[in-house]
Length: 157
Image 1: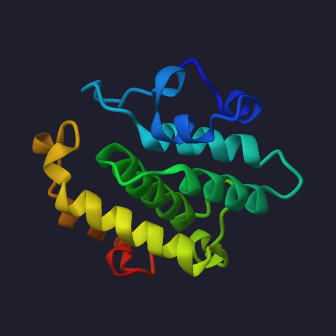
Image 2: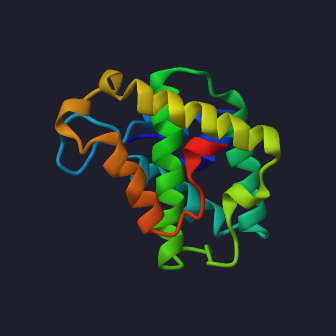
C-alpha cells in the first residue's frame, strides 16, 4: 500500500481508501491477492486519533463513504468488511473507540437503510465477491460482527 489516509483526505478519495482501490490497496497478510480492510481501517483510525475530535471525524468520513456506495458487490462487500472492522477494533477499545460510542447509532434512518440494502445485496451475491469460494460463508462472517459487539442485524435495516 502506498496511499495513506491523509492522502485520501487531501485528494477526496475516502471511498477509494476504504475500498482499497489503486494506491490504497493493502494486501492481506496471507498474500492471497485480497485487500485487507483492517489495515486500511486501522490506518484511518491512526490518522484520526491525532485530530481534535477523532470520533466525530470518523462519523463524518464514514457518512461520506456510505453516501458514495452503489448497489455493487465490491461496494457492498467493502461496506460489510469496514463495519466489521469497526466492531472488532471497538471491542478492545482500540485507538479512541469505546463501547459507549456506536458508529451506526450516529447514522440517519436513510443511511441505516442503505446499509441494510447493501448487506442484503452482498449476502445474496456473495458468490461474486472475489475469492468468496475460499472464505467462510457470508452467514458465518455476519455472525463475527455480532460476536464483536455489533448490536444490529445489518440485514434488517
